[in-house]
Length: 153
Image (cartoon, rainbow, N blue to C red):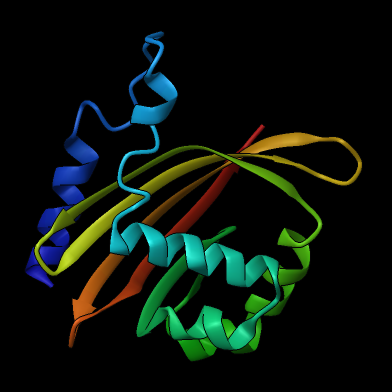
């Protein structure tokens, strides 16, 4: 748990995390880490939500995952699956989403994934979603241990 906290603090303190330069390769640098195994786990989780694949989505979460969203907290994969996951799947399935920034950093058996997406609803309204994911590796498998989602217009 201590390593997880240290990893999160280091990631949050990184000045280059979501820089706003105007260099030609800026977009590429904002997607660094997506190709890593933890980055692929996060992307697979989002794909499973979009495709309404409950089994895959739940399999990518630690049993004791903490999910913070919209003022609420889910305290396990089972709680999330039985409460809010289905409504998240239905909602995400109606959006057009573009990943704008994704920064994944590994710290041994833990990793942070920080992302920003631009979402467009069926009615044409747009907003940004922000996600912080903390992943842990146990028995050689990466799982999402913590998710925090927020949005802004």
